[in-house]
Image (cartoon, rainbow, N blue to C red):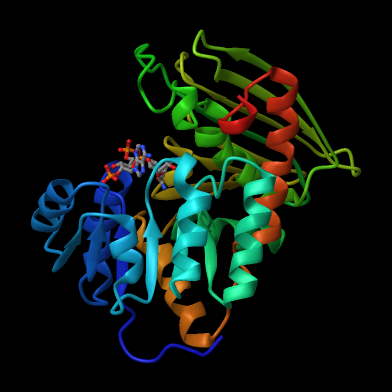
Amino acid sequence: MEPLTGPIRWGIAGTGNIAAGFADDFGALGEGPIVAVGSRSAATADAFAAAHGIGRAHGSYADLAADPEIDVVHIAGLHIVHADQAVQFMEAGKHVLVEKPLALDVGEVDRMIAAARANDRFMMEAMWMRFNPAHVEAMTRIGQGAIGEVRRVIADFSFPLPFDPGHRLLDRAKGGGALLDLGVYPFNLAWWALGPPDEVHHVGHLATTGVDDEISLLCGWASGASALLTCGLRLDGPMTARIEGTEGVAEFPFPAHACASVILRRGDQVEEIVGDAPGLRHQVVEVNRCLRAGEIESPRMPWATSRAVLEHFDAIRAELGVRYGADG
Ligand SMILES: NC(=O)c1ccc[n+]([C@@H]2O[C@H](COP(=O)([O-])OP(=O)(O)OC[C@H]3O[C@@H](n4cnc5c(N)ncnc54)[C@H](OP(=O)(O)O)[C@@H]3O)[C@@H](O)[C@H]2O)c1
């Protein structure tokens, strides 16, 4: 891919919660404004553009894809639209940052990777935790042996959501379920610390809507290292994480996926790692770096990792009986 020069022109596809959070945090980068937003409805796009100081509003995703003054699109819609929109935008010549989870399943990811290759476009899953400064510094220090050999990861992302069958997290038609939405964070943290697991066991519970609302995973590595990872939509979990080593522990306080600091303990020594405030902007720095370097894939959030995570999730969902779209 031809490296981009000059200001990188961003667009946003979608006008929901994460689109708003992204637009608000983007300003802190000092990289210039977001150029355009797209929505299924012109009125929604107009209102979002006005609220976030965005110059152009498109009343359809096709119009956003056809906008010649956009280099890269943040795909901020529900999981169910990630794959089709990523392919649509890449075929229109745009690079894409796709919200987590990258897609609903591995079949969709393969379609997206094929489109990225065929169109020579950048694509990355917006797993922003991997770019959060406190996480990055803590994981670097752990990699250098700050807590000895990593042997166990314990991580949770659970909260009690009032039951509403139409809520996107509980509605199967909207790609609902705890694993895809919340489980990706603890799973990515364990993967970051220990690499791809050699075995993954699960226990889960389904809501009456047919999506998983409680999942516990026990992951194992050939070394004997392990991870206990939990997520849920109907219980009050700690939403913290611990990475335990032979000589110390790293503690990720609430909310572990977006914490501002990480505590490293080693014997009597306690160190607080504090990074630049958490936010969605840090991943944008990496996307812009890749685009300026002419790289179609980030080495920090590679396609193969996003794909392999979903491969595990496909297997878990198949056993639990959680199905989406054409499989439903
Ligand atoms: N990175 C994070 O921290 C984080 C946090 C929350 C969510 N997310 C991810 O971001 C995505 C969106 O979550 P959200 O909380 O922002 O959801 P949301 O508030 O419900 O917004 C979803 C958006 O999807 C768009 N959309 C496009 N096609 C749609 C369709 N066919 N049906 C319904 N909506 C459609 C809608 O935009 P229009 O109406 O304008 O078309 C809507 O505003 C999810 O994949 C989620 O996992 C990431």
